[in-house]
Structures are given as C-alpha cells and as structure tokens.
Image (cartoon, rainbow over all chains, first blue to last red; front, side, top):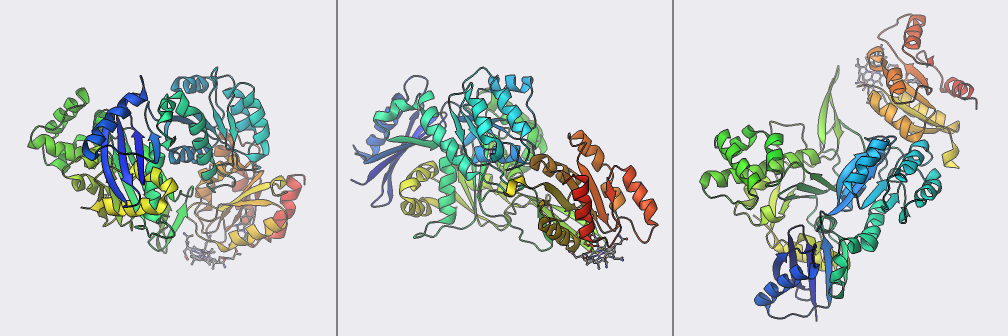
Amino acid sequence: MNNILLIDFGSTYTKITAVDIEKEVVLGTARGITTVETDIMDGLNQAMEALFLKTGKLEFKKVLGCSSAAGGLKMVAIGLVPELTAEAAKRAALGAGAKIMGVYGNELNEYEIQEIAQLQPEIILLAGGTDGGNKEVILHNARMLTTIGKDIPVIVAGNKSVAPQVIRILLESMTEVVHTENVMPKLNELNIEPAREAIRGVFLKRIVQAKGLNKANQFVDDVVMPTPAAVLKAAELLGKGTDYETGLGDLMVVDIGGATTDVYSIAKGDPTKSNVALRGLPEPFAKRTVEGDLGMRYSATALFKAAGAKMIADYARVSTQDVEAYVKKVEENIEYLPQNDVERKVEIAMGRACTSLAVERHVGQLETIFTLLGSAFVQKGKDLSAVKNVVGTGGVIVHHEQPKEILKGATYSESTPEMLKPECPDYLIDEDYIMASMGLLGEAYPDVAVRMMKKYIVRR
Amino acid sequence: MENSKVKVVLGVIGADCHAVGNKILNYALTAAGFEVINLGVLVPQEEFVNAAIETDAKAILVASLYGHGEIDCRGLKERCREAGLGDILLYVGGNLVVGKTDFTEVHNKFIEMGYDRVYEPGILPDQVVIDLKNDLGL
Ligand code: B12
C-alpha cells in the first residue's frame, strides 16, 4: 500500500490530496467545508466522500495534515529595535507560517500589553538584544508580559545572557515558556531557524488541541504545521531540490487569497549588478511575506486604496468607475464572481495589482547614491531580478482561466526600476493545488515531492 | 568570554565609501580587546544608533573621509539622546572637512555638535585605543 493522504484544513475549505508515492501520481483531490467550530471531522468526511466518488475507496498508510483553520496560527512578535530584533522576530514567525497580529519594539507599556491581550495571540515570540547586548528591555518586557492576565505560550529568542532570568520571570504566570537561540545573536546576523522550530513545536503540542484539530487524530496521524509553513517547505524543495533530484533553482511563489496575498522566495538575492553595496538585515534564503491589505474579497477595498483606482483601471483598460463599482460589489458579497466582460477584466486586474504590490513589498530595492566619481548603489533586501520561475498557487490563481495575466504583476517594470523584481521569468501554475500537500509529503519523502511538483506544477 | 568584552560601534557615515581606514581601526580595536560592531561604509546615522541600542555598545566611532563630514555628522548626538543613549561616547575622525581648514576650528565645531573626541587626519589607532580605555575607565 503506497497511498498517502494529505489534508489542508483551510480557513474555508478542507482540501485533500491522495497520492500514490510509488507511482508518484496524484490519485485525486477533493474538498469539503472546514468545520472547526463543530467537529473538524464533518468537513473532512465530506471531502473524503467526494474523493472516493472519483477514485473509489482507498486505504492510506499515512495521513498528514496542515492547518490554517480558525484564523491561522496567530502570533505577536516582540523585539527591541524595530528594524533589528523586532524585524528578525517577525521574520521568524512568518517563516513558521504564522499570522502576525502585531510587532512590538522597545519597552512595552501597559496600553500595548492590553492591546496584545486583545489580539489574542496563540504564541508570543519574545526577542530583544544581541547576545551580550541589551538586557534591560527584554527583562522589562518579560515582566510586562506577566501582567497580561492570560496564559499564552511564549518563546524566548533574545539575548542569551539573560535568557534564564527572562524565563524565570515568565514562568511566574505562564505555563508554556520555551527557550531557543537568539533570532539575532550578533548585530545584522539573522538566526531564525531555531525559533521557527520552537514555534512548530508549540504548534504541535498546544495549538492543534486548542483549535479542536485533535478531533481528527484518530484518523490523521499528525497535523504537523501551519499551511503557510507547508507551502514554504514545498517552495524550498522545488527550488533547491534534494541530493537525488534537482530543483528548478531560484523561484518565487505568489498566493492570492480573499483577504491576504502571500509571497515566498527561495533565493539568496545577492546583487546581480556591479557597484552595489548591501545594507540592512540579511534576508532569509526561504522568505515569506504576507500583505493583509491585498486580497480579492475581504480586502478588496483595502486593495483599491493601496493600488489606486487608476492602476487597476489601466491594467483592465476600463474606466475607474467600473473598477469602483466592482470593488463595491465583491466586498458586499464575497461570493460574487464576475458576470460580464468588464467584470472579468477588473477581476484579473485586481489580481495583478495584488501580485504587483505584494511582490514589490517582498523584493529588495536599489537606491542610487551620487558621488563625484559617478553613481553607486545601495541594495536593501533581495535582488530577485534574475529569478527564473514564478509559481502561482492558492484558490484565486489556480481556479482562474488566465492565471498568467494575474502573475504578470510579479515582473519588473520600467516605471519602478528601483524594485528588484524578476525581469523575465517563466510562469508556472500549481494547477492541481497541491503545494501545501507537497510540503507535507516532503517531510518524509522529499525526492518524491520534488519530482511530483516538477510534474504537476506546469509552465503556462 | 566573547560577551564580556566592551562593545563599540564603528562605521563610515553618509555616502562615503572609503574602506581602508575602517578596516585598520576595526583590526586595531579588536586587537586591543574590544568587540567591534563594524557597520562598514555607507552607514546612515540611524544605523549607528540602532546598532548601539541592540548591542549595548559603550561608544560609537564615526568616520568621515570624503569631505561632507559636517553635514553627515550633525544631529547624531540628538538622535542618541532621543533613543535613550545620551551617555554613549561619540568619537569622530577622518578627513572631516574639505581641504586644509584650521583643525582647532574643526575640532570646536564637532565638539559643539556633541562629539566627545574629534581626531585629526592621520591619527594613529593606538591613540584611539588609549583614549577609549581612559574614557571608559578600563
Ligand atoms: C583610496 C582613496 C579613495 C578610493 C577609496 C577606495 C575604498 N573603497 O576605500 C576611491 C577612489 C573610491 C575614492 C573616492 C573618493 N575620494 Co578618496 N581618497 C583615497 C585616498 C587616496 C586614500 C584613503 C585611504 O584609504 N587612506 C588610508 C587610511 C588608512 O587612512 P584614513 O582613511 O585617513 O584613516 C585613518 C585616519 O584618518 C583615522 N581615521 C579615519 N576614520 C576615523 C574615525 C575615527 C573615529 C577615528 C578616531 C580615526 C579615524 O584612522 C585611520 C587609520 O589610521 C585619500 C587621500 C589620502 N591619501 O588620504 C583620498 C581622499 C580621502 N578622497 C577624497 C575625495 C574627495 C574622494 C571623492 C569624493 C572623489 C575624488 N576626488 O576622488 C570620492 C568619494 C567617494 C565616496 N562616495 O566616498 C579626498 C577627501 C577630501 C577632503 N575630505 O577634504 C582625499 C583626502 C583626497 C584628496 N586629498 O583630495 N577615494
């Protein structure tokens, strides 16, 4: 028996993918409604029935799940300097697949503690200070967190010199306090992998249960990670490959949803042009960013504000009034789908605007410095101009008739030459919507996952 | 132990790319037992301040070689005060102004801007080490 079932408990749908790892084929995919409020198994059973209608009854030797149900893994990141340890903590949490509710720097005050309490994070990541660096702020923040009046798991990833003290303070009022390596042991040195692992550990131990996902336990062997972490894992496998299976090389993944747009990049992002100095925090090789104001439905109005009516209208070649009218329609009725030619054009243009802006915020920027000798450049962030593959995934893209038109927003534009976006990439579509599943599969069968992605994620 | 060393932040400010003096100072200070947080060249004021906060550095050493020192270095002291680093030592050196202006004048100008020590071109790193140890009571 070589069948494995991979489940993605999404915010709306529970999506399942059955694969045969011997033949390396997708046997079938299906979906049900996510029913985390009542019993998570209801929606899963619904999906299973739908699957078996297509494939006939199947037996599985392993069942693995990931989840973004019930709002995803909600986290708050705390550091010292906003551009340094607070940013490093944020990146660690994003890389672990979290939904970032807030990022805090410097000494927390009572208002911020109240605010954090209201945000209801499921995990708090507490950083601050390089190793041997600032001690006072992380100690202060630990003390402040004990006044929050809630028992929230805290991961401590700050100045190692005071880590034991910080943990002792937190244990006065929290039951789950996990120590891990500093997210920034030395200035401008990013070390997010240990924090990512710690987050995953807490997710497995505590969050799965808190979200009622454990009800699926008789059937599912493990809900091993948040969905975005599975997608990041898949992207990393597809890009880097394994010892036995070559990857595609540097790549970018765009996932547009109703509320947010996620961008992932698997690339070092070193400067591709000469005379460029790198500045700022180093970038993680596997990087994820999320834009909460760029989405097709819940965030349609926010997108409209961020992009401007003109940008969307220009892409669509319709009037700004048409854009405005459509945005209003879809925000009022999130189930709405385009009914005529103009609406279809606006829908594509909105997708392209999501892609374009989200990618612009993900990639690095080049700043020109004029000197008497001529110009020099300073690069902040990743230079992704040479990235050859842009992959589209997520409901909006995979179910669209013209996904490439949406993904074109990822490409370099002469009107914004400072943005280091891919210059002439190929576009690939995750047509069977299997990336999250492949991330799960890749945990145990990396070679199979790479080969299957190369087969099923196709050039358009 | 690495972490008990006194930390100092070093960098070349503004749009200045002169890298050689920076490397020599980094070497000399490290050899003298300091942990140098070297930000390299092309460093904005803000990064000096952020680095000092996060690492709990005791001094910031600013270099400016290309002649725009006066413009680039102005306001750093105020920024430090703003960030709660009012007591941190500030040194500045290099070729602080264009051409051969009288150094006493340059010195006074930078002292007024809030720097604790201002160095003439061609200063030897040894002197900087001696001054740092004195000023920090080491
Ligand atoms: C090499 C060089 C360059 C190279 C730099 C290569 C590199 N990446 O490092 C290049 C060709 C790129 C260059 C460019 C420019 N340069 Co140039 N350059 C020089 C040169 C010849 C040597 C600098 C050097 O490396 N010295 C050796 C090191 C060890 O000495 P140092 O830098 O002075 O540092 C020592 C001390 O000053 C002190 N120190 C330095 N910083 C600090 C900081 C603190 C806190 C302390 C305590 C001490 C301290 O300690 C160091 C060790 O002893 C000097 C002339 C000279 N002989 O100094 C001109 C010089 C610095 N350059 C100059 C100028 C004007 C420029 C340009 C603007 C244009 C031009 N005309 O070439 C551009 C600017 C580019 C930019 N954006 O920065 C002028 C500056 C004029 C002024 N300030 O009045 C100089 C003095 C030449 C001149 N006489 O006109 N330059």
